[in-house]
Image (tube, rainbow, N blue to C red):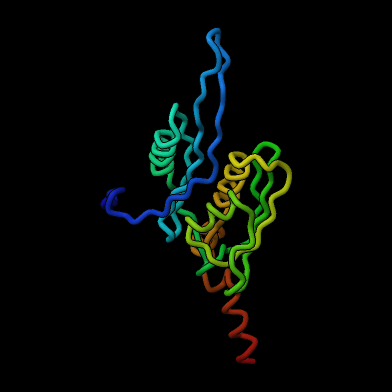
Length: 176
């Protein structure tokens, strides 16, 4: 399988948060910046990165590069997620629930950025606990990592996809 070149892909890039931090030294304060960036292709791949530098632009560039390297593929069910998941990281919890087409992304800032870059259009979300953007994004990615698609779950259980989805049972009922 050929690996796609990062430059060839059209990637969505969203800067979620920029934070100024100060280190107090003998001569005064040294300021630097953290940039939290989410990158995705809109087709089921997303990654995030935290770049740190003395200038905002450099921090954003570093965060983008880290996010591109951290991109992973997650299963989608059309324009939503396959099933309900609970992602946890530190004090942050994120509940993601599939929604019917046309619902939109009902989610707060950091979670919305991840889901938009992922390519999800219909989902319900609730962020519980912390409001720290880094922990909320990590909890979201943790929840996305717990998702199964129908093919993978059927293979894990050792049954066919149609049996997993209950298609054979419905046919038997209609035949009777």
